[in-house]
Image (cartoon, rainbow, N blue to C red; front, side):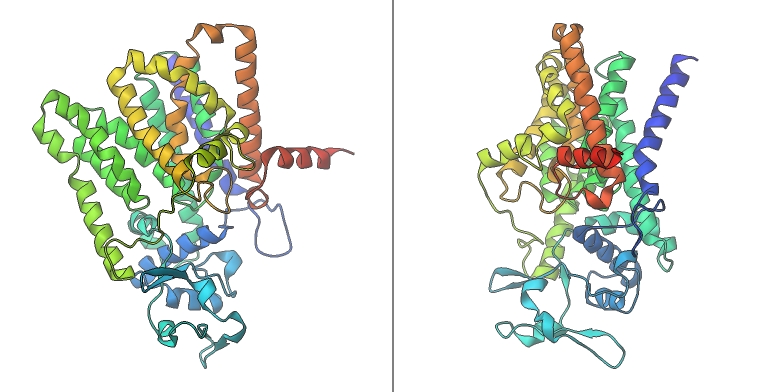
Amino acid sequence: MTAARSQRLFLVLLSLAILAPQCATELPGPWRNHIGPATVMGADEEAYLIILHSVLLDGDLDLKNNHAQVVLGALQGGRKNAGRVMDHHSIWYIDGERYVWRDMVDHARWTRDADGLPQYVFRPEFAPQLALGPEYSAHPVGIAFLLAPVLWPLRNTPYVELAALLCAGLATVAGMLLLDRLLRRYTSNETAIRITLVAAFLATPVWYHGRSFFNEPFLVPLMLGAYVLGFRERGGFWAGLCVAAAMLMKPQVAMLVPVLMVPALLRRDWRQLVLVPVMPVAALGLLLWLNQQMYGSPFRGPYPFMIGSLWDGLVGLLLARPKGLVWFAPAVLVALLGWPRLVREEPLEGGMLLAGLLPAFFLVALWADWGGGWCYGPRLIVPLLPLMAIGLVKALELELFQRFLPRWLLANALVLGVAVNAFGAFRYWESWHRFPLHMLAQALGALKP
């Protein structure tokens, strides 16, 4: 087999592994461990699916009627929620304070009207006319904007949920192919590239989130794509477009714009220098306009940035149970050893990668909710993990990793990472906010006679 065919076969097999959890899910009802097409399972996933349906079916972002249709049996909140009263991830700003639906509604007093639609009663401390107005999401709406053109032909079918989750898996595969392209800029060692790809996409929560309907699986290829295109002499506009799309889901990705402008500035390529920020500026304008329309001010977003302890966040992201990288992605931590060599050999590109990676990581650590809420692993840094893993191709070149013991430890870190995240990806509904070693111990205990 030629080297090119071997490379293609490896990428195909890795893509199939990434997509495999799409076929294993828990279906609504009393049966568990059913093998079948994926469904959304968690509250935030359901909220994003509601937003997507609102854009597809109504062409707006008012979620009130969509939640009402779910109570009547519609699939807009996913198959598992049809006929149920979901938690509305809706918010209001009242006198500058942010309030969420679940804390405003008197859940004991809701009724149905003559058409069977739910009628909710707000608590006495809130103006009753709020119940008559629109409901806007407590989450960014960019995921709906990105997927609506793709899923438009399916808008009146029961397949939107399945297709949305498949898009998340395909986006993760696209991220893997982009990382493969990036790695080939820094090494010709095929083994090192393959180890790094496995470490980044099967031995981290990236695998798990490729089965989810969060923002993270879509941010993975956009951030990698921004670098792949940004490193090209004529890729400024397209790199900026990737950043702009990512900003609709996470506005803080705008921090990449000045980083991606550096090569054009050094080349004195003023045209490319101007092209990089064009689409991010347009995305910023759209976000400010949406904030004004939905929340009454361009400077109010769906969620505030709550400053916490940077130290607690850093320790938590690295070591905490059940969120730390040491438990979910130990091979990525090994990759940190290769970054000094990468920066020495490729000062411009290595510096640019770090300039995008480090501020984003520290920003998550500084946030009070650095763990990402009720979810699997360190969700908020999932888009950063493939970038962090790049250092592994250089770590494998170090003299340290020419010895048996370090290579044995790395192999065990990879095996642990793959085992933990395979359990999470294939036992998706059981692994939210769980400590991975406990999950594995329970699974192994269940296998004993």
